[in-house]
Image (tube, rainbow, N blue to C red; front, side):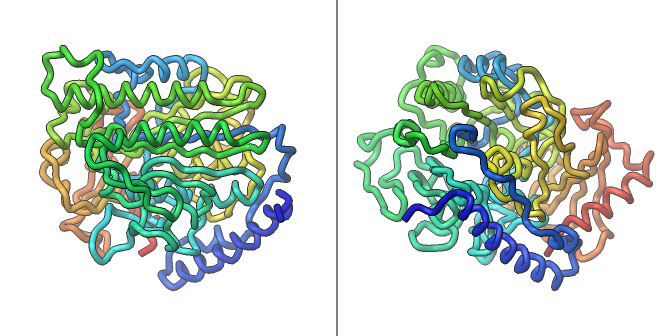
Length: 480
């Protein structure tokens, strides 16, 4: 029997409240400052009729730098679909991933919790959490309870590669899933298998099995066409343009004098752009849709790719793995004719804002302990919520790459964290790979992003009072 949307919403409010108490109890034991968020019941908008609620599409590219797309100044790589979406929609200039590497970034995106509160805080490593638990809540669970048909196609990247476990996409609110469950499996563009819900779908060996991003695109298009009158949430997460630079055809970049890895990388981004065109072409013409396009962290340099050839970080400091702007500032384009206003927004926003934003459009419940705030008013041009009081990032990484390491003077394998409040940004590095128990021993840097977005001038010695204030915010943002 199909449960009416309003009943589902009320049921999920109860579920969220239970998880909220579990979350608050765990935090209480650690003494972290989350208790004020857990004191209020989950908020829910009364769901509108299915015809009034928009279809929602979220596209998350893999290692797509801030400057890798035409709307953000890219000149060597062609992205005509995204260029058009940016002209017709809203382009954010100060949007941030929640982490500088894939797994923690995606965990925060789905759960609305920044890296100091989220379950997964680093890429997979033995002995550390790499998946979600039963008590973790994703925006897909909230929207599905509100009557949305939900599907994820692409890289999940959280938890073990098996069915029937709490971190499987089907267990975390996605009614249909096709793609990669595990983090490392998604590094293979011609895999021997992909997952369709709880079943392992075997593909032909090597290139005879098909190019995985194309297979993901095909299934996402089918999902749109099969939705009927019911509103849907589609999350499309191809592994493009993560290394290696595998692509069936170099296309317009075949004759370029660049190294093969750079030509392949450029072709991957242009192919991603064409996939977006396919998704837009499949959208129902009689329904309103909001499409959000972003990336999970800054540009990579693996597999021989030179991000500097393309100014892929938008000429900001840093790359994937860095907490400087180049490692965490990402594209965010919102498109939705009749719903999303046209123009540019300088609103400071982190991916933690996506959960409350999607939920508000869907009339779904929103847990009160989320670290993000809804972008709905910004997208529609109405007066909406302002940004979070401050943004927080955490980095614990054992893998080093040359450009990222040089960007922070050899500290890329040291634990680091960053805080942004208004125009000020604090970046601090621990003495070693682990987070210290005290605030002593850190190497601290302070930047005025309003005047110095490239983070070239460290002002820590000139503004010790700001350093102290933001350092306290960093410490208060961490729940162990």
